[in-house]
Structures are given as C-alpha cells and as structure tokens.
Amino acid sequence: MEDEWVRQDYYLADEYLNVLTSRDRAEDFLEVMPAGLRAKTSRCIDRLDARFRDLTFEDRGAELSKYWYPLAEGQEVRWWWTRRPIDLPPGW
Image 1 (cartoon, rainbow, N blue to C red):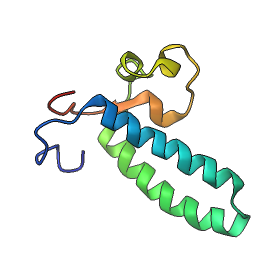
Image 2 (image 1 turned 180 degrees about the vertical axis):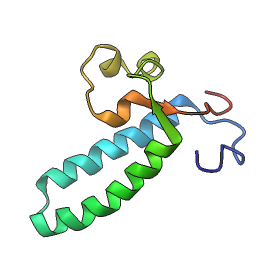
Image 3 (image 1 turned 120 degrees about the vertical axis):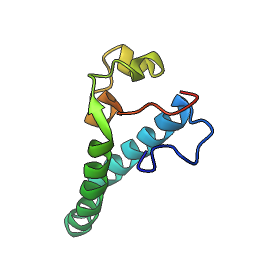
C-alpha cells in the first residue's frame, strides 16, 4: 500500500485478508508474552499499526465483510478488520 500498488499487476482481497490474519497472530502472541518482551514488541507493532492506519480508513468493515464472513456476521471486532485501503489495488 505504501508504494500505491505500483509494482503490483493485481492484489487480491484474499492477500489482504492473509495480512490481517497475521496481525491477529501477532496480537495473540502479545497476550502470552512476558511483560518485558511484550512492551518491546508492542512498540514495534504500534509503529506498524500507525503506518497501516495512515494507508487505510475506517469503513466499519463494509468492504471486507464481502470477503470475510466473521466480519459480515459481526463476530470480528479487532480494529484492523474494519479498515480498508484508501485506494483499492488492481484486481481487488
């Protein structure tokens, strides 16, 4: 997203969903880390989250609910799932 998709012929919504599930796993790991390691890792994740927020906007999951059933059914509540890229890439 930071490169405005310039090197991509296409980028499927499924690829974006894979990235979001990776973010889920990072959050799961944070929850079980020892406090010192969690603090250090959280600082890194916070910086990445800020970059993600800059390149996406909150649409309450409207776009992604077409592709991710837990979101469509109201079961997904983590904030990164309710954001979509500002500019959708080719092939979305």
